[in-house]
Length: 283
Ligand code: ADP
Ligand code: MG
Image 1 (tube, rainbow, N blue to C red):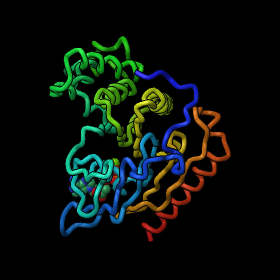
Image 2: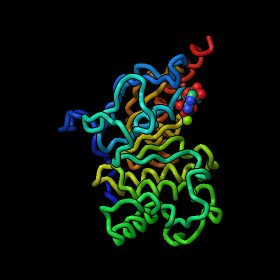
Image 3: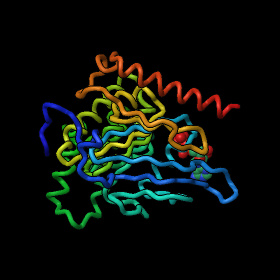
């Protein structure tokens, strides 16, 4: 386990400083049609993610964000285009990626304890000893601030704590890329702030391993607060309509960061883009 660095300037945010020209993830011309005679959910959707980046994807409800994440992590085949991980096409779920869903009530097993849920995906990992698995489970539970709750069952935990368990389960896999699909859409405002800051803590904690975060959200403020870069998606068939680097210092702070001029400008610009997109979709 890495210790918290004192400065949280994250690797990969400056393209000039990146010695590796191959991005960790290249989303290249993705198009998706669920049925051959149906509408395109996305079309000509392209962007890149470098190792260690925190990228947020923002777009209106129903624009195809979850579809995009499922294509990225190999759960859904694109109709056109490719997802390249380290330059190699993704054709099935790669072990380097873990996905956290919005609905923790459906993603946790109610009959398993916290430790049981976090360790569940490791069960079939024959490359890991029992001791390694125990260590990973303990590390992931500590990383999300749930040490001491290992023997609890989901029904004994608050919604925010349950989502922490789901995040720990993804971390126990030691993914290079953590994909999060509107993970905080079902919790109250204060819990949401705590969980947002948890993601920043996790990013710092695993900085040496270069964990990369890809967060889908419809919450523009959340995207700006957390990300190094925001990809704004347009209405269906969705594609990237704006790519906005977020020039805000780290570590970020719920009050100070949200009061900064750069924060206000970024959120205004994204609101405008999403608003324009809505008008176009309505007309
Ligand atoms: P978002 O996550 O941005 O709200 P989704 O990716 O869930 O959007 O959905 C985008 C569009 O694709 C919607 O019109 C939705 O009805 C459609 N869609 C999603 N999943 C399926 C599916 N399994 N079969 C057919 N259509 C789907
Ligand atoms: Mg969705």
